[in-house]
Image (tube, rainbow, N blue to C red; front, top):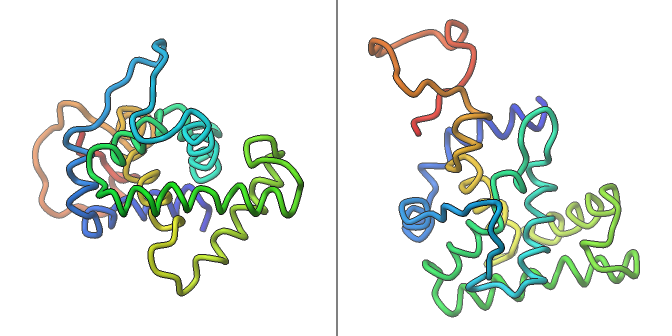
Length: 185
């Protein structure tokens, strides 16, 4: 199964696993104009750039838009500022340092200075570090990236199949008949 297919299937099950904070972030979500400069509320400017690069490695731009196109760093910043407790915020921000620490140890550079291949190596190390650990950064940043992307305008209209005015309702149809998952946006 290719990564894009896995992401599509993951989006189906994301709703069942969402926390109240994440749902609130979706409802109050950030609608930012890409032409405007923005000032992060919860992240520093460097952390926002780091989050943007991490999210882009999770959902890279290919023949479909990536995380940067959906402005996921803004979504994550808004979610942290609006919905995270001080302890959750501190854990998330501390967790971001793991990406920098591994980058420095392996390549003597910050994460954002690495080549895409080296970024993938750091991401693999972070995922390996997350095994059997509670409150690790990986599930949080991956979950926020997927949630933000699949609830962004780009994710809903350009990645998932989208029909703004659906036809008649059919309660039970064969997946082969429609050929893709449908967004509800």
